[in-house]
Amino acid sequence: MANDIKDTLHTAGAAAVMGLLPARPRLLALGEPTHGEDALLRLRNELFRELVEKEGYRTIAIETDCVKGLVVDEYVASGTDGGLDDVTGGGGLHDVAGGGALDDVMAHGFSHGWGAHAANRELVCWMREFNDGRPTSERLRFAGFDGPLEITGAASPRQALTALHGYLAAHVDADLLPCTAATLDALTGADERWTDPDAMTDPARSVGRSTEASELRLLADELTALLDAQEPHLRATTSPDAWDRARLYGRTATGLLRYHHAMADTSPARMTRLCALRDLMMAGNLLALADRGPVLVHAHNAHLQREKSTMRMWQGTVEWWSAGALAAARLGADYAFVPTALGTIRHRGVDTPPPDTAEGLLYARTEDRCVVDARRLATALTTAPPAPRVSPWFGYAPFDPAHLPGCDGLVFVKDVPRGQAPQG
Image (tube, rainbow, N blue to C red):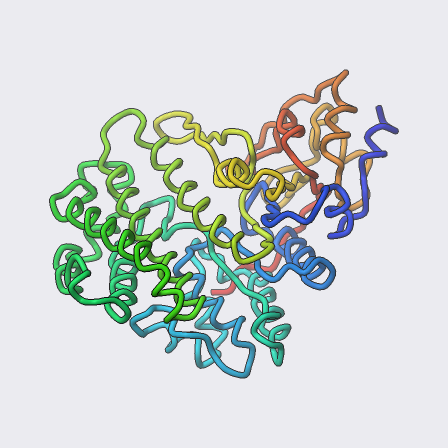
């Protein structure tokens, strides 16, 4: 078995990953089993750089707020010789990104605290430098593909609704609009009503099924229907970026209102619905990005795998189809999934993996990091299936060897060192 496993290993890099695929996919999904480790983020950066230079990739999408991500995209896509259109459709974000203040971009362009990580800052700087002086068609683009969500709750729909309404109001007959901006503002009310963190564990605190929220859901549906109905006119009279952003605002507004509605649910399926709705929003964003050209996607393995995802939460285990599973069902061979597995994160209490686990078998046969032919490894392990690994730390999810047949490759990192502390 030792030689069979060794035969599945290749030097880490874009060439090794692409060599496992029949063709260049529109969505190449690189998963990670834990968040916030600089070693894994820098591996992602290296892979993206090679994909840009050798495979023609021009977009990277990461697990961060899709609306906040527009700030980063404007900053990197403009290089140092000009900006894009106003990313809000109504003003505001140009004040943050247009002046080129990197600290502001990192502070306002990421959710989940990702802007504090050195490797993400390095990615943003490299992308902006790459774009300097290049024609628009060759410039790199950045995207967040998560919804405006945190584990503790969800954002107010105000920003997405207002931006969508502003775009339509500027370009279609006013008589076609289902409401005024003032109506949206009044129905939304105070943003704190929507962002109350206690609503995640207490459905009674959610405003998602209030009369105002129900009216907003209907108006969001009518606004997105108007957007679709006016597509020929809007594509002809506004820029491709403006059109793409309007569609993003439409997906975000309807997705957020649907999510808030589910937060007010009192049934046992509540958390299953919330997890599924979040990944549904992610999948919609990924499919829209895939329409523009090949994309490297980076997120937790659980958001990208083809199999059903599971998570242990306070009320029990929930299962749902991930964004990757949803995108793969639509794209077929144009979706490729390469998860990351790892040996140790000693500063998190994750020590040498047991030798009878998949990570343990790879740990004994690799020197640093490598790309694994997942399907050949699955065949090599058929006669002696590895045991599942159990993590002593909640923030790390071991790789499930039963998922090997659904992977297009596997990146293995032997040891994850302690990284630079996030910047305050």
